[in-house]
Image 1 (cartoon, rainbow, N blue to C red):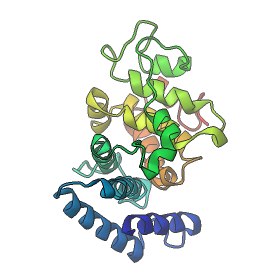
Image 2: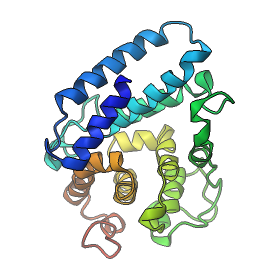
Image 3: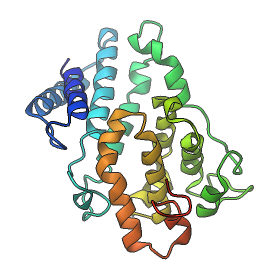
Image 4: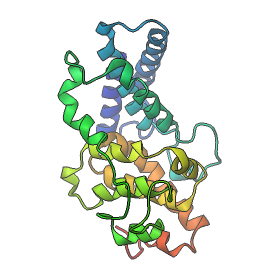
Length: 255
């Protein structure tokens, strides 16, 4: 209940923008309460009757974390700001939620979330294992990918394919399941590059933000500050990287 109310108040902020980027007291209260209750609950044995509540709370907390950046302006936001342990905190929350998947199994026959089977299937749809089929040539070139590339030979492989799947879709056809394919690809070597502010990794995140924000409200709330922050960071520190600059506003491939 607290997690659902927290998301409702966050969505209200998105619709009305009455508080700008600041979370309301109601948001903070329900977010805090749901986090505390979930933490206590996870220390106890999980019974069947609690599985839906646990999964729903974890999913809501992931949305709350993503939609609530600490910064109000691009200058205060990652990656422009000095690095700290809160960078990409939304990613840790998302990974934490998915760690509960096998425990609560949202697709079990008696689960309320079984109606989302198609969305879950989309989120977990496999990405290519070799080559650049379906990838815009400019994205492949920027990521040093070719027909023989694999996830083992190139750390950008999965992320580039995930972004490419939504780049040319009409905004009205981009779904939550499709956007989550990219977040699922943020792990291992690619995650390390992103945390190190590698320009190509940042550009892939920027391209994802630019597309996904138009369709998913909670992505838009973070993209408002991080998208221009990434853009400014790349222009400031990687202005000689022609293939990256081409994708930014004003570039040959910019929106």
